[in-house]
Length: 419
Image 1 (cartoon, rainbow, N blue to C red):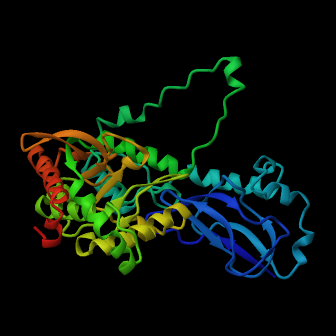
Image 2 (image 1 turned 60 degrees about the vertical axis):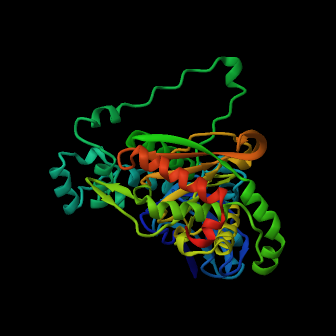
Image 3 (image 1 turned 90 degrees about the vertical axis):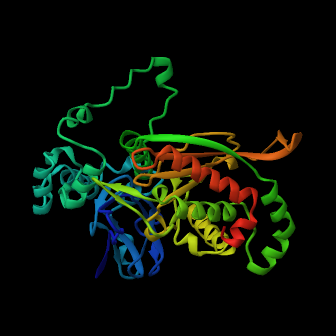
């Protein structure tokens, strides 16, 4: 008797995934709950565990194919009986030889089925149809997230929030300019690699943010001497007591949450013609991985101590590097911090993490001459950049926010006294 391997629930708003790497090939013995393949979604990479022990008897969907919720991925046979599986199957399913997939009838059929499902259409949901009519939109202007591409109410709400309208639909439908042909000499030295689903999502979200928000960036600089002195004085005691190193992110996160309470517009988002003010601070931390940028979220950071923030950040950073972030780790952020300084960036303008209205860019700490009290002294300075949505955040609020962050970092006792 065979046990089916199917696509598990992928999380809120995620309806499909791309098959990444198969860790096993046909004929391999498998233990229950052992990871056998990974799925790439728009947000995270998920390992799929074996539902039972036995032998992998069939791989239905090869690496690179797109599958929906509940789709059949493969089968596990009891015991070692599956070793007699078709000889061509291992070659087709091995992660190192994806090019062998086309000869497999089962894989080809699955691919055809997947392709057919991705282009099939369904009429919009009733609630979505009503909203489309109210906003003078058509269903073909919106990417549906429902089954077989059905447009749901949430899709229409998101489209309206992005400013999509009937007149603006024509330019959006214009295809991107075709890539010019390479010379014969250059073509042989090029390599074409399909973007991962995560990279496609990153590209789309960043471009959508640029197209939708009235994005502007304001800059300031902060003298890091006070924070560095405090950190050097207490880092050993801090690590001994809390079991985690004292870094800079704890200070920056607390400074940000203090400023967000004073300037709530920076912590808000636009939903159609409404502004949603968040009376909580879920701070996203942009983390670079070998698969792309991810933004895990420290929830209720305003209610946490610096030690608690450092512990949670350490957990999330490790999970990001290991590819084990959960959907819950990635959702609900109200503001984002990105640190280009770890890569040596001296100054940059970060792009908003939509639908958020603010993102703080940290940069490299560099010793520079500054004038203090009429004297030129050398201080460890860092440039800060706040990119914000000018539709909801005024220039005065943005500048004040950045000044408050600067004040907290240059006088860290304010963080302890909640000033």
